[in-house]
Length: 150
Image (cartoon, rainbow, N blue to C red; front, side, top):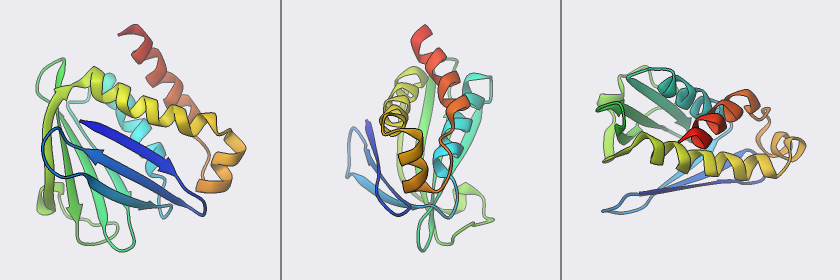
């Protein structure tokens, strides 16, 4: 599995999820909410002991969610759901499951950390100009410490 996140101009974040098997999922994320901070905060929560987390990305129209459930201390199930409405109050399982893949928590964390690092490298000012939110520096640094340990 691989994930590529590209911060475009004018408040769009393109997320491409390539499962080991199946078609690539393209998610055009809008700045209607701060999906980047949500992703970073949820990875911190996972490494602090949460057994599952949901990351929400608004599109126009609709919404995607990454649902990550720990299977053990080292393994997680990574699922991508498509919801029919923005800011959907429905449970994640009410959406359409696009993919589900088991992998190590370390591998998944490193994939997202790599992509967050690319955004940080553009500079905090440029990031804010493109995304309209501040870069989640504290969460990013906490994830970085986890990645370096493992």
